[in-house]
Length: 128
Image (cartoon, rainbow, N blue to C red; front, side):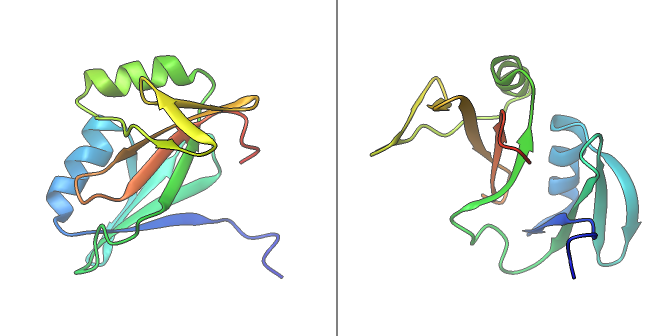
């Protein structure tokens, strides 16, 4: 039923202008469509979109909200750090980051937060 549909990550933000600066200037997304309800960003190469909208519940999700698959995680993390992105450091059973990057078998991942605290990730080989 839903297997032939596109999917979009949907993130609540408290300040649409602040979020816009982050998603456009820091992450480099381009606006696909904007309306009074929020902004839809095109995620090039993913066949998916990212929708941000104002909400009082911004940043309340304590889990990863969206993961972006990248080819070179080290270069991506370095580039985002240059733009002011701080990466999370985790040390849990089965998950430990070093310099912000966790190695999970053949995959690698790194997590960061948007200005509202939404947890985002970059990762390799996730099959996404």
